[in-house]
Amino acid sequence: MHTDSGLPRPASSLTGLSLLFSLVPLGRSMEVTVPTALNVLNGSDARLACTFNSCYTVNHKQFSLNWTYQECSNCSEEMFLQFRMKIINPKLERFRDRVEFSGNPSKYDVSVMLRNVQLEDEGVYSCYVMNPPDRHRGHGRITLKVLLEEPPERDSTVAVIVGASVGGFLAVVILVLMVVKCVRRKKEQKLSTDDLKTEEEGKTDGEANAEEGAK
Image (cartoon, rainbow, N blue to C red; front, top):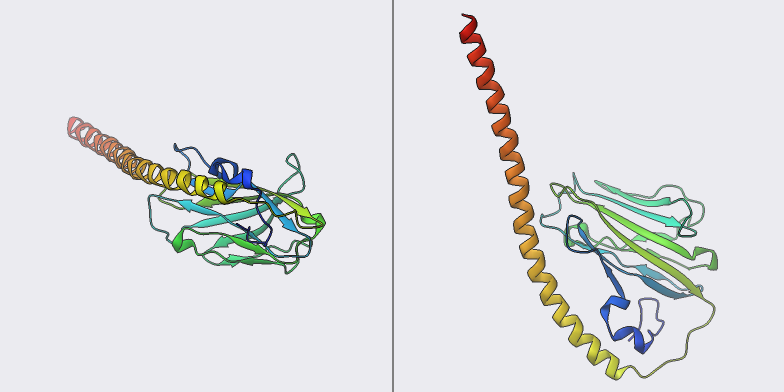
């Protein structure tokens, strides 16, 4: 099994999807899935994969996306790609014209391609996703390492079988949890809206009664 850059993945990394992908815990944040670590051969192209799950369809007029780069985990973030009704590439000298959007927000995919990867491209890449009326922003974080040569191939047949089994089970569990979470989130937002309407109606009734008393 190979990565998008053509480099083989170590067999041990397939024994559990948790070593390959970071899934934001099911809770108040949007679920964003990325490879937590990505090894890319110097001079090759790398796909920075980022997908998300949302309870709502994507409205391009409200949807927003930010891709940022950090030279180190404690360094400041530099934005190199945005989506605000269309793709915007801020002028970042580090990448010049080597960044290309390869996703499709309508299909919950906001991946990007980084062409001709260089050693100085090593660092942390983050994708931030916001999909109203969902009120919570999702965040995925990828650590990119640039290799000077390809690692040796290893037999990963057993690891592939185990990984496929674990992946299938996790996919079912995640799907069920997503359905439950979406139902709950929509109910919570509806209740919140209803409470606001009730409060506004109460204020209106109070003002009307005050006017009648004055008369």
